[in-house]
Length: 218
Image (cartoon, rainbow, N blue to C red; front, side):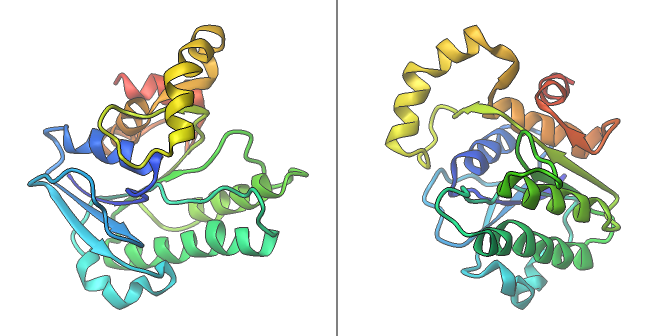
């Protein structure tokens, strides 16, 4: 399987990337990033820097021949207006999806969303993510899977984890995982669940934490 992945310069995307590169069934991963990726090198890894994802069609010739797209790019809504957050989370995601679909009409699209996503929520971020999920599922991909992870633990060797998160992972995650295992995931579980959805499918297009845990073990 050949995969396009976004978000490799963020914690979630990098964790998914490291998981994919360690799987024999993956022959190639093309990371599409807004800035240079300075992490590990690997024979399976290809890199494409696109400073503006809303202009990804300008380099669409590099996006041909892939089986799946793992869209892990995203930003926090903290401090953002609804208009700005909608532009990045909804409009940019949909545009990227449209371009990769035009080049790979039999593609599977796996999208990192968020827990408690709901298009009718009072919470701005939840509404925007919910609309994004719905419109992705309306696109004619072979399959679309929206992943709603919770508290996530980074993998060893990741470099795109900020110091605050590193302290949290070291000190608080073991406690949270002991007290509330139903809301905690490792990024390896997330990556394996995305891969298994792309390779074998899943019974529903929206995957909550329990689905991710189950699918990661398939």
